[in-house]
Image (tube, rainbow, N blue to C red; front, side):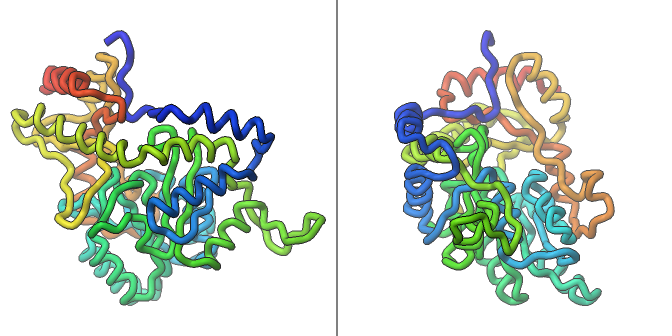
Length: 371
């Protein structure tokens, strides 16, 4: 290929420049302006959440969620181990204690049975979990009935990390709207992007107000700068919100196209022995942000290197957090699932602009790389 095929490049809808121009002409290019309000409103309208607060990243949204839910030094926070570090690093920002929970093969998300066993064990040793950060990995919903029921039973607050999962549903309800707070990421590789940004959604007016308050340096309502608490410079800018508004207007098309790309891969790679695609729960509909596969007898790390030579970006699955050196001393409840997925899995190019012939070419090149 003369040009590189990227894993999940930005896809522009066509109105981005128009909205950016309007924002610039209004001279509201700071973290204030009408496009922030419009974008937050569009997120609420699409997801069904009552409140949305635009922030600088999905990670900052998780940090703010932990803060408003009262997580402080020494508190125990449960989290998916099969995820990106941005999902769990905010636990350390609060000087809290992460405890990692493994996945199941049904969804690649948190195993509900292992989650409940972990909670029972932690309670026995005097470590009462206060919050669960649940990641909907690769845009695929977790088993929300089981997980919400467990959280309710043990009085654990739920933060949904739907960074990769905007547009995914569980029983026709959008993920990110089941817990106390949900978050979405608009990083450059997500299904919609603001180049860098995120949003926190909630149905709790008080939580939304506090998230916005802390994201804007915790400034009190005075004509001078008055601070009774500390906050953060986490608010989304009007320029980024303008980009996001243009992007969210085409979200239905993007989800449909990513699911179509997944189906193309499934058709074109059907003859590879032992190849399995990421599953989908019966009551769930993922956005197929990335098409992900696991091999029976192939080395995904070698395949990644070979595909790089061909100018095609593929990537191994997430290395579990409990395997990361930074978390070497954390408590974890594992069953081997996420380690197995990491050792055998691969993410395939899934950009919204891919057409059938592109996927056909990628599939052909992938087959050539198999040992």
